Length: 239
Length: 239
Image (cartoon, rainbow over all chains, first blue to last red; front, side):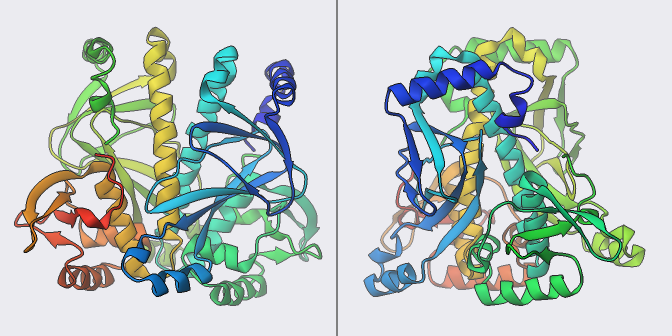
């Protein structure tokens, strides 16, 4: 897994602690509750210190210009797309842009966020470079995600999507199945509606396909409702 | 439009020329023909000096382990997803990773590519920072793209996809329609199969939906077969 937290082993922990101290001193630190919106502004840079952030894309009221009632109906449907997680130690930014706005929500309770202007990083040039490297990495992950979403069959998109998430964020979990294969689970829950919004499908279809994958033993759901993949599903776990 | 080429106005043209000279001197410069594959390796960084590059994602033969004939059938279908363009002045890199490999092709004739190791950029620290900023920008664009692909209706994904491409790469073209609206066109051609591979649909469906959008006046195709959008389709053109 790639994250600042794990890469801290190889670089001074000192910088991250300095930034935290600086953030608390300058009131640039806040704790968010699950599903609370993080009021992110385009010119700022955000760091997840603990917890996880969910990025979503929402259509801007472009259609309102054409038909107000239609747009309202579409708003009521909550047409927002799940765009991925930002884990602890990772940066994110929100560059609002038509026809979509991107928004950030705390995905779990006690998600700690630090924010700063880009120029604040002038104090920590090495850290600035790491942030940019992290975006470079995130960009590569999104290319893989786009490759998955290009597949025609919804079940392929679903399986590819789950595989990519677990490859990036998966944690080892209880061995499962008769053969006792090793497995990795996504540490956060995702609703079927959220999954559907990411892969261009509906909650109903996702529920049906998840059942199908489960019956084929390609995914598992444990008592905690977290999605779990046997290790043979992913050829190369970087973990 | 964001590109190194246009941002060169504000920074010394000198660096880019230095890099070109260096690349030619060290045989790190090559011209590619349309649809020629650029043999990109993970540890290298690539710059498009002229022309345009098409990134595609291709499924790795994961399924071959399960069924050889099935995998061959799927390979014959040419299941590759269009992941976007890299225009002149922009960098790209290919981090191969299961279950997809990402590949780069020259999208037009006389596409010039410069390549280097990341450490070669130590000579041009300012340029290195610009490269990382470019990836930061590309990452933001991909988030918008993912937001578009999260939409359930194929026609919405198609329209969003075209809008994003033209917003980023569009060039002004002849006024069209009775009202003589201003319009922007994508400077490169894209087949319906390529569009389908990007939005999780088929060539046949894309052809049908493009016809529908055309008949509604939401898109135009000029004599040169390039896709053209009237300006009112995008609320905020950055151009």
